[in-house]
Length: 191
View (cartoon, rainbow, N blue to C red):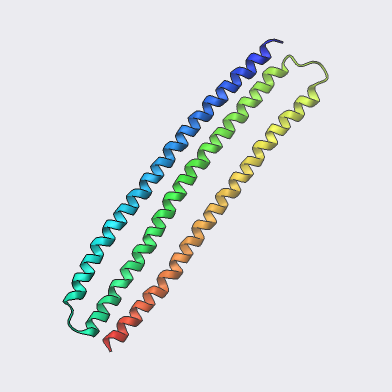
């Protein structure tokens, strides 16, 4: 009978250690994601500055207003595409970090459920007669909680997929009118 407090103490200690390990892994993944975002921002900023300098140099050499309009229109299309590409890359980084968080949470929940059920089995070996129904009810509650988490996680993944699909559709819808407008402006400038 005195082994039960020791079992709970050992289980609690193992749970805290596992949670610290998961927290450390999630912190590492968060830092990796932030590094990717900072790198993306720096690369985008550098590219933008270089492109702006080149565009200004080109525009300053133009003598004809019609040619200037054509050149300005031609330069606007790549900027729109670059902005959309930046949005896609940023969404991809966020999606990757979210996937890592989900994976870590799934593993932690599964491991905690397994350990809790093992602890319940150990503790119930010395349970008094007639407590079988209470033990079964407790095991069922743990199983239901795990199933509920799995359903929540599945729903969260579906929501993330839907957001990604909507983002891709929005990018497509923005790209087509921008390209059409650039072509129309270019044609009008040539007339």
